[in-house]
Amino acid sequence: MRVLFTTSPGLGHMFPVVSLAWALRAAGHEILLATAGRADGHIRAVVHAGLPVVEALSTERAGNAFAFGISAWLKQEGRSVAGRPDWSRHVGKELARNGGSLATVAPMYAPLSMAMSTEVVAVAEQWRPELIVHTPLEGAGQLAAAKLGVPAVEQPFGFTRNDGIAPVLRTAMDRAYRAHGVAGLPERRIALSITPPSMAGGVTPGWPMRYVPFNGGGLLADWLRTPPDRPRVALTLGSEVVQWHGELGPLAWVAQVAANVDAEFVLAVGDDVDPAQLGELPENVRPAGYVPLNQLLSTCSAVVHHGGSGSTMAALDAGIPQLILPQSADQFINADAVTGRGCGLTVEGAVDADLMVRLLTDPEPAEAAAQVRAELHDMPTPAEVVPRLIEWARGTS
Image (cartoon, one colour):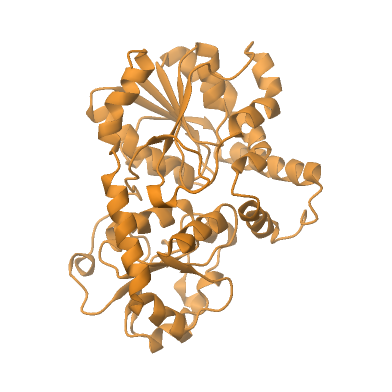
């Protein structure tokens, strides 16, 4: 069977589909990914994951379309934060207060999906997939599935509520639907769910599938293969906080706090940002540049991060406590899910040594994190989900 994947731009949307794509290909199916990057290197990153990729939109055009979507959405919604540099933080907090439904911000992604739709539909018509898998805010894949009359699968990436997104995107993309002679959404649609059972809450239900982290490949240094002689704490801000802001502001406390905590801190914030902006780092802070997060977390006792879905899910998969410093987007939703389950802490103010010691020594978050890891690992793996997906797509189940 031929399976076309379509994702919104950004590694946080692109990386979560890699494990399912691998599983499909390992089972003998053909896969193809149509996507766009929000920054240089994004397309290359999924190509390096071994996936055949079609660039549906240039990075420049994707950036312009997303910027237009943000501006139009803020103006239409009458948001008082329009024009403010911290608008994304305010919108993220509002999302969390409103139950975490991404349908609220779906129109923000509509211009991006519209811009991708011409190439995505063209690729689909040429390649003729029998199944299309798309991320929640990517509307071009659903349009292509509807036009070809093939089933569509939504693959989530975190703890947001995704019910209601599809019809909202359909309405916002009406011009594209009319241009392609398509009336409505695909007739056959399902959603997957990567949420551990005890953290389901208001998350949209779907076919359960274990989240298997993919954070890119990398050459593992000796220190990463050797168990540390004291607790190790990972410090990361994901793939976009540093990219868009160019600074390590949420980790400004590290130089002063780390020296007062008996642990090794690994500063894994990529290769494009100078850690010197944090000041003179104590000897127990290791600037590591880029390190595959899932490999790093397997050696850690805890992690401090921004609350991005990839970082949150990777920490849950590793079964370690997490301290979340949410900045924007869905990060407040993920933080609420983690703290609500008791497997981590959230802070929007200063981080001090007492908080770090609590993260490392309080047994309750560690126990809860271990329980969630066990739940995740009991869920059907992508390899186990593939036969069910194929049977459903063929109409034999």
